[in-house]
Image (tube, rainbow, N blue to C red):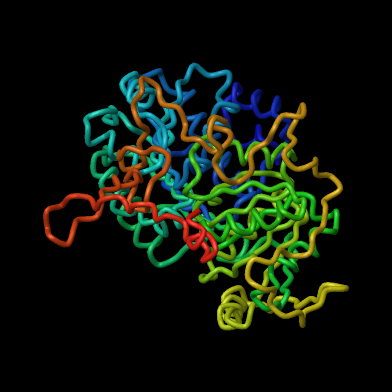
Length: 486
């Protein structure tokens, strides 16, 4: 079925053709007609199936068929900054021949440009819930004429605790609207959300519910925890692992894995909540361009990553929940391409593995890495793994043009790309998705770290005066020097 059979606007069909697409994916073919007709819709599909275009194309068609109005007519909510940026890229590509204005709203950057965009009455707003709610509570944004609300990656927004913010936003929107909800899984919480926000929605489901894509080969390596980094280095000797996304449970774990890989010559980048917006965007850009071979990320930061060509996903730390496993491995095998998902299973992960296999309704294939010693004892503390130099890596410390290149840690004087905090316009600090100021060097509560002033210890007599400096003792003289008077 060609795109022109779906009832899309001619200008949008022109943009689709210019983008090189000829036929819709299954989720697009099933979702586009009812959305154009104005029906509320629940779309269940894995990442990489074209679900962004499944709601973008029909919404743009509805806007093209109507007279131009002032004020925001479409609101798209997504869980992460990266996903907001990627959705905006899709909308801009398909709306290139339409006189529409688009704004993106998310935390981690200055509010002023976003406030100006909301004041101007952009036709389409793409936002994370936290920052948008903060700006709406300040009185910015006119949503009185809103026609379409889209909740993308709804399951992950609930996992990240955005439900209260979403409910507060929806309360301020017109009740008469079209609401579209897209998710990789359909849990009881999502079903409850649809009852609250939607009116007699149509459900479109592609593939089995909560099942990984069929184009992803899934392997399990049972390995002691202390040998995981050594096994990862061993596997990376295979050049077929050319674009690898590695998942860890924690931010510190991501930094540690990346540091160990770089010490063995593997070009890496990290993606987690402690990285600034500019650092995260640069990490994604370097990964897409092939500048780095491995991207080490946490679940929340990697949510919504839209990168084609990922050859392998590695679950370095096995996920605690089966849904997270489905989301992780959905980063490879996209758009009918073949991908591999590798999971490292330590003894303490066996129960989680059994729960996953029950969840997806199949057992995962166990593999052994050729030539790898699974019986090696844990290395002494501080000892590095065996060194392996990636033949594609440049000498350490050299980037393009021979200039020094920063590693994972921040370096003074190197600017934003070297780990420094992003520069803010007007000298104002940036703000997170809740509107709180952000800057480099924060503690977990978002407060600026600073060293307390060192005060001299109080004297025992309570007078608070610093003790007198110890007087230098004369060097001891030998008995011969004392007898001779010298």
